[in-house]
Amino acid sequence: MSYSSMYQSKLVTAETAVKTIKSGDWVDYGICTGHPVVTDKALAARADELKDVKVRGGITMWMPEICSIADPGKHFTWNSWHCTGIDRKIIDMGFGYYSPMRYSELPKLYRENIERVDVAMFQVAPMDQHGYFNFGPQASHLMAICERAGIIIVEVNQNMPRCLGGFEEAIHISRVDFIVEGDNPPLAQLKSNGLTDVDRKVAELIVEDIPNGACLQLGIGGMPNAVGMLIGDSDLKDLGVHTEMYVDAFVDLSVQGKINGSRKNIDRFRQVFAFGAGTRKLYDFVHDNPQIMSCPVDYINDVYRIAMIDNFMSINNAVEVDLFGQISSESSGIKQISGTGGQLDFVMGAYLSKGGKSFICLSSTYGKNGEAKSRIVPTLKAGSIVTASRTCTQWIVTEYGKVNLKGQNTWQRAEALISIAHPEFHDKLIKAAEDMKIWRNSNRI
Image (tube, rainbow, N blue to C red):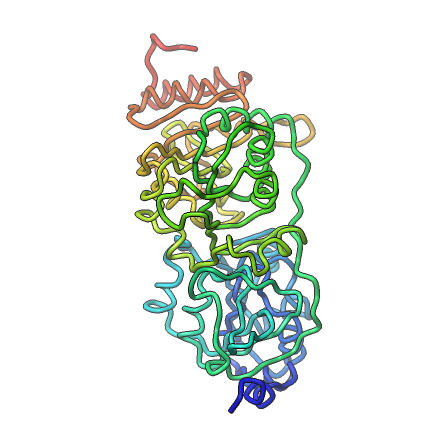
């Protein structure tokens, strides 16, 4: 049977495809831009027939239809691998939950620890002449999902870019159970917020430490984006990319000629990533681009692979840092904000890289209506999750400076971190350090 004939034999409506889902099933939506649209809507329409359907997704960029029905918790449970504002809303609604994990482990979790994947359904690019549906910018862990899934439903979107060059980036039609032709919506866009003066100052402190030929990993958010912008204005050249998330900043640097990957120890001349989200220019750039290498996250975020790349520069955000050097980047107390993601892996891998550096950046304060609070705190708020332990932490950067905590004892760490806190909080932090017996009388700032 030809691939076109096989395609027609498996082509069904969204309503027909989701009839395979039963009460009590575990259903996987993939991740980020690949979450289903028309099949999600069809599943929501079946809500009254179903109960206890457990759905996995993550990095959610729009509210799923199954979460928009009346009393969704009677029928569905949402389980997120990494939270966005949408995921936080679902959690606040009372039927959403975060699933803790190191992102690098996710394929292994599916293959060895997750008991059931009854149905997997997600958006894909149109089938190519060889019978493959490309996962688009979400290779991540999708092949591992498919290997465990009882039923695989692909929802074709003509606007999904084909991200090539790697492996486990597509699924063959012979392994697909149902094909649904979607409404071809534009991919959800992740637009950057305007940069603040604080973002720019932090970025300046980081960029001055980046050498020519460095390999970059940028996290999501204003400060990593500011680093990308300042690199674009610098004389840096021959940069490489090996990153969990591909963002607009890499596109801009590529167009500016800053990125060519010529000095990478592995995957030379390739920009390597696990998933991506940004504006239309990103989706256009990655489509059929031979310099793009789309790979599963257990390849991208592997600590030892990161360490193989010389001058690896990892730049990520944090919510709070305490005076012991513990990094909380995913929660504020018990309130889940994002997830562990790959931060710990990149913190460790960058430090192990020859010439590599891990930067955790944050504004010194936060708050509204003039009620500023320090992000550098004596101890983390009760319930806050430690994303990177104090033993892993290297460079911490605020608008007041940067400090390297590697090799420092407790009083040296306290002194260094207080030196880059907002001056308004120095005395309180010193008093707290004294009470915790991690302060020397001779080193008062």
